[in-house]
Amino acid sequence: MIHAFVCLGSNLGDAEACLARARAELAALPGVTLGAASSLYRTEPQGRRDQPWFLNQVLRLDCDETVSAEALLDAMLTKELEMGRVRDAADRFGPRVIDMDLLLFGNEVFEGDPHLILPHPRMTERAFVLVPLLEIAPDLALPDGRNLAEILEKLDYRLEGSTLFQ
Image (cartoon, rainbow, N blue to C red):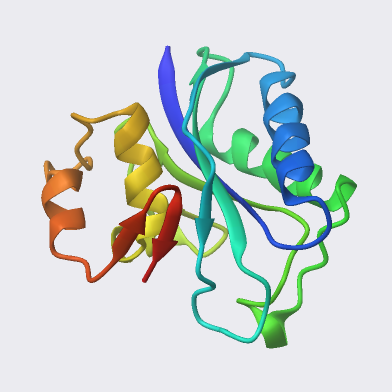
């Protein structure tokens, strides 16, 4: 069993319903079981501030040996399209109905393919990833051994209830 961690985000339409659908869609993938889901966090937009706030959540997906990181990522991108995600290279951090980011796939490291980079290259910069990730996996470390809780302590962020400011 391989534990994959996925961050979900939405800031268009009914964000809570979008995240619920995304959870269900991912849990229905062959060889994948939803192992854990964090609380929902209302988060300040990153990169581009002039848009609605996001609702974010991190999932732990338990994948059997038939599931690869590449296959999971491809399935996630397909599910995003099916849910109405439109990718705009000119507005990379703009509003979206759904966003699914593969953060970690076991201890695998991929760096040579721009389509798949593991661990996710910006996850250690984002409180909206680390706070919910550590909620469901408090002892988790990166494949290189770095402790995620220590990385989070170094970020400039504020958590008020379930609202994250960064």
